[in-house]
Amino acid sequence: MKDSGDNDDDAKGPGNTGTGIVTKTRAKTKKPSLYKVLLLNDDYTPMEFVVHILESIFGKNREEAVDVMLHVHRHGVGLCGVFTFEVAETKVAQVIEFARRHQHPLQCTMEKE
Image (cartoon, rainbow, N blue to C red):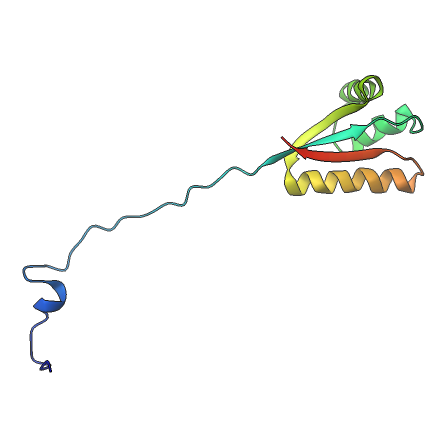
């Protein structure tokens, strides 16, 4: 049994001054995954409606919106933008909800970049 009067050299080790080097470990932040938001062509949604969605939901100017709309029309699918998961998911939901509210079958989807 140890007497409370003993010195603390055993705890620190003989000759240890109790000082040391403090090191900080930094957590490396990982960039979030990005997702492409895509519009799919259909034969029923008016072109002007698609342009309106691209302007109002995706912030495209008129010329960009028309370019994307024509790409969707000619190729069946078009890129609206690239976003983090939550933003992409929200935009897809907004497009689908807005199209349904106006009785258009427009489809919007997202895929990992």
